[in-house]
Image 1 (cartoon, chains in turn red, yellow):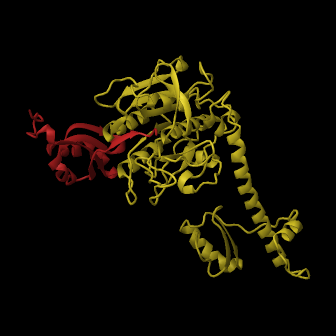
Image 2 (cartoon, chains in turn cyan, brown; image 1 turned 45 degrees about the vertical axis):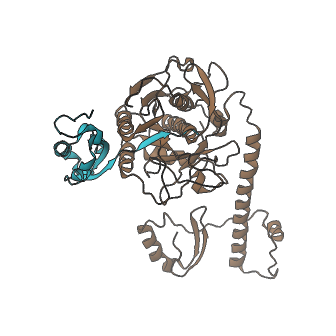
Length: 86
Length: 391
């Protein structure tokens, strides 16, 4: 069974977690920028205003659309980190 | 360093970041001014004259056979200067090798774990009291008997994980950074024994986590006013990779906010066959990258090196056979740059306690200033071996 993300019509199986970095000069527009990102399908959004960073989930085919939002410096898929004990 | 001072006679000492320039002061001035404007030169001063001690025997030993009839004062001065520098370099290098052997031989761990002795913990009276240390890891067993009565704040960020430290890695790292002065069993293994502990669980029960939880943990730690954020975690990088700009920015915000972030350099090396580059996020220039050394003060076989330009190892700390706490009131010896990193976090807490001016970049600089040089390459150990501040 394929779940659907409410309000977006996207299959959650296609969702990827992303880290979005804003231009720090644009951090005063954080709310406006996040609103634009969410309109393009970003969900489960977490804002880190002091870092000018937004985390969220989005359809894998929407990454370039998010990159086109004014004030966005970069969008990348989240990476996995692990403990560094040998 | 500049390679030319307007054609002057220049002698470089790259190890010390010093150049001796012989040139008419009026001709040299404009060149120096320009170099200082470009921040190539930090400072310049006229040379002082020093009296050589024992220079005659040193000169005889090094095969200097210049004519004894020479009375040129400049020539004599230069030979004396050269001999003095050569003697100094020889003594420094020789002392380091001998010292390393002696210290390695006397780690008996009767009262303190070898890593703590190596960083000079017994020289300091500092405890980390009043300093908040965030350890972003797999959680913490706050029921461990060694941590009774301590100020501990727990926060869960990892998704699909229990709030407990099922893995054990977090409890081990917190033990090294903030373990007690007198544990219930065995030698002392913790550095900042009175620091306040902020344990953010950003890695899951399996020891893995993603940017979402890590960045949330860093934001929380900064919000809580933690002066040090310790992250014994990382992702491998390849030669040619660029640092992650997200962590460049986050690290800068933390430093500006008075919080130093230290992170494990990574364990992907297989020395001597293969050296892997510093992992992410430690490769960000605003996050202090920590390498691991063993009891012989040589880089641990697994410890990553600064192969990519600008993505350097900043400092080295003990990271082999490190004794520390584990969940359930237990202890064990673990190794990794994960284990080196909380040594640095703990010492950073001691320094931060010693003077409130040591925050952010100032704390970073003080940590490096206190290091002891090692014979290993800067690529592998950065500025040198972590040292606790004297008091």
